[in-house]
Length: 410
Ligand SMILES: Cc1ncc(COP(=O)(O)O)c(C=O)c1O
Image 1 (cartoon, helix red, strand yellow):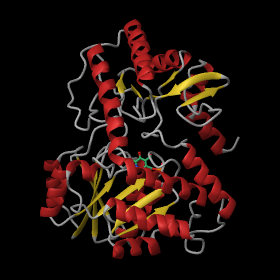
Image 2 (cartoon, helix red, strand yellow; image 1 turned 90 degrees about the vertical axis):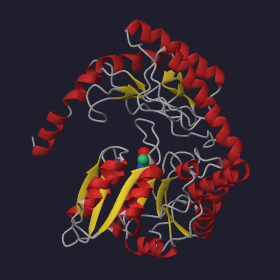
Image 3 (cartoon, helix red, strand yellow; image 1 turned 45 degrees about the vertical axis):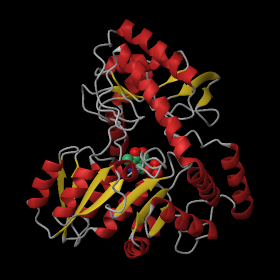
């Protein structure tokens, strides 16, 4: 056997054991799109979806994608440098206007948007400063920038959401330029970033602040413009990266900034320049959802938050621990790997899909079920999920004191 076969055999031990025990919970093949689907004929309601506004399967979104398919097919056979369409350009202009920035750039995934942005901007004169719970795309972009010969940026971390820790790190940085990276909403814990405080420190200490608002865009702020709108700090953060893979119904990255900086990223971000164009049907889907947000943003956001607030109240009343959550993302903290996997399976058998998040996705002792409340869930579904969760959690001895986290977003 070659060393790669040996490596795979050794490193997949845990996964093999889970499969053998019949408790492997990942990569379940859905037989249709949407929050309600089947797996091998078994009906489930998906509570781990990021389709927060429930618009991904809207008939108008599907129709728009069909139309673009007829004009542009599925692929454009090259990168944006030589395969840009009028649809891409129009949507970039509309996104910039909607989010209140001078310019925007659409990339093929949000992951690529962040990796490309960091690697394009950071060099040997830069200190990259990251929240220590940063998403993989921020970490990977940073490690790429830190490890690129002749550009190697300095890498530093600050304590999650702590402006005081950020200040200490910025004051002791070794390079003259600093790029600080944080998130609008942290997807595993469902807590809002402390953006006003972090922005203030960046401002005082001459650092550029970049916010990844993948989970806030479309879900937060009265109009759905995201965490910056929610906190009333639009115009105070020069760079935002987001995605089409949650509210915007497909896949794709969004970078928002000044014309000058967007032009620099557009010409130098290798993950953008050397990877194929986002397909036009997906651009059409995102453009259609943008129109819905422009037209009905406040009502859509209100409905999501009303459902989130309803669910939070019920779960807390029943004694569930929602960790740090203060948004529609409400991890059900189980804090034990075996119980977490078991809960997942028993819920799944009852038609409720909540993906377990275990080590190394989170620290040992922080195992949880991924529960995202979306606008697409009905109140009856939410009630049913609470009833079944309560029944199973009681059996498993999981219920305790409901956490008292303030629902900042609802
Ligand atoms: C915080 C955050 N940033 C970026 C991404 C990447 O987005 P995409 O799915 O478009 O690659 C995600 C998606 O999981 C995310 O949660």
